[in-house]
Image (cartoon, rainbow, N blue to C red; front, top):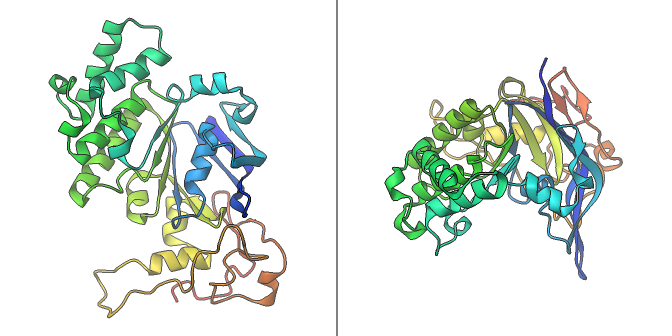
Length: 326
């Protein structure tokens, strides 16, 4: 029987300023078993990164605040932890890889010392033991330990991202959150970094949340997928559920907008319209202004998730009533 490591229920996060209230996350729920990986997929501004910051206890307050929900990690609600306890969890049991390696490293500190610092912070070891662990992590991500004393500016973008991964995995965390880990890298380096993350995740049996807008990346590295739109999960399931039996019009639109090398076409299909302003979300289904299958009923009341199977759920009242390949 699988051991559940993370269970998020009805998480809502907003940002309040004098001008407006931004509803960034609106009742997100999902769970993750030990050693399992989930991809949070969606457009920029969907609420994926804010969800991750909520798990890490890093939502800036003010203006951000968690208004409802629970985040249970290893059976305990992280939202009830004091900041001191969360500092012990961050980097130790839960680590995060941020999307821009250029700004994630301290430019005036050798990369090896930046890894060693994390090891010292979360483990009762000597400085020599911490250095040894840092050198070992550099080697694990494909960087010679002889480069321990080099500074970030002496590394390429791909190498910097490898250092970030080494820092994140230095304490063998139970949960790794990767926020667009390959966005700033070219395609060949992306493939290397993804392969590295996949291998290390298997080696350390680390559970992972991968935040991305790239469906190809998700297919390579994840077990489950949650499609996020306007701060809500609108479809979730296994990789097979989402890639072969997608049901929500938005999910179908995402896949249809991908280029297909097998079929020649003059232009790509796109999802019409724009992502709604999170400070002024539409009533009812949040996708209704852009949905080709929208009916008056879609614009009236909140749409709940409907279970299609034990693994597959969708937030749509017209499931099965439209052409999924259109």
